[in-house]
Image (cartoon, rainbow, N blue to C red; front, side, top):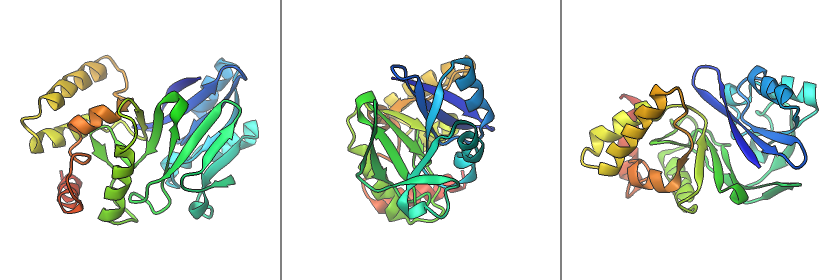
Length: 239
């Protein structure tokens, strides 16, 4: 299995998970269809599934065109069935979705939206977190509550430390600036910022991060309680 990062729009990431044994792939959150199609056609891979973490347009914008071209099935959270375009298969919290070599546990993570989920591909030690958990940050709270988002982050915090985090946007540099203001003595964070700058200077993604790295450096994951988290989230909204 291979995970390919596909930059989309201005700062979005979509992800292709490629089953090389069967020459098929699933795509996570296709913001737009064109870059996905370009990679699939160049590598002669068939798109089998479209997996959506939530309904926002910059995560589902390619659904229609990709489904039309490849006959791919759209998979999303049952509670968002009216908002995810072209949805075919409805999945629930804690469900294990399996197709051939693809296997993912569904983790319900409301906060950014009320229907947000993450896909945890445990065999690949990878979690696709959409707009819930970012490298050094977390998503804005649009539909849920502070408690929703805090509880969702605590769920992700329990994943194995070596789990790789593939999030929905390249926000890492801006997030690191905020973390440093509020965690100035964190040497792990300073080392991570150095690594971030090297990657961005080379035109590389800062993704994936890891659960271990986020536990060490992400002030939202390091929040002891929802009250502290809420204050930080408000400060970040105006940073």
